[in-house]
Length: 236
Image 1 (cartoon, rainbow, N blue to C red):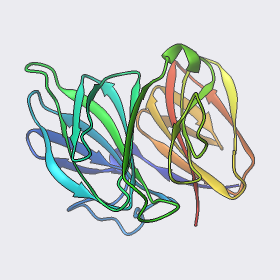
Image 2 (cartoon, rainbow, N blue to C red):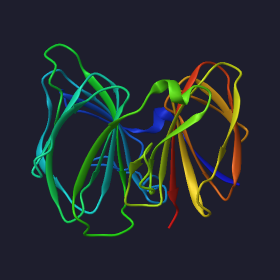
Image 3 (cartoon, rainbow, N blue to C red):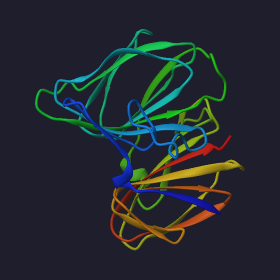
Image 4 (tube, rainbow, N blue to C red):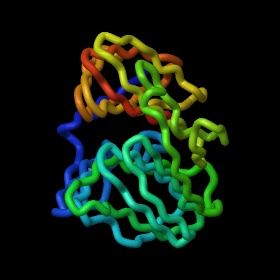
């Protein structure tokens, strides 16, 4: 087993007034040669969007984009004709493929929106762009990992154009669990959303993350009530 630790305090930071963002990997004007990507995981942004603000129409291509709201509402529009709003408990996935234009906006007049925006390099380039949003019950992740995104077109997960799996879990204090790798050769990037865990000889706290490779299973202990995001991706 090999590990790499990313402290929450060492993430990139950009405050644009309407957008307060933390970057786990090099993004926009923030660059760290040691934090370009983790395998096929290219971007993990921790964004706070002010009330009534958002990202105007802008283009993407050949990237898988997953959005996980943590608080508040996000309104999506794109040039494929899709419109929709998502909040906590819902997930948005988009294949940019040959090219897509979209906007993401906080429609509230009073409340900020908090979310993770995640980019993964695609398995196949230049596919037809697509958009999907779906609800996931938080009850289904109590003291276990709930798979929310996978490369399998399954009823209980959202499809992604990559051999990647996204999981969420919420664990009571003193709960012990394990993460089993789903595809040989994949690595796991695990972030603590809230709480504190012990894993691979380390203690991780809120927004700390660890990348793990060359393993089949890893043990995790929740030292207090903890919420986790696991992103399993091919490493090459």
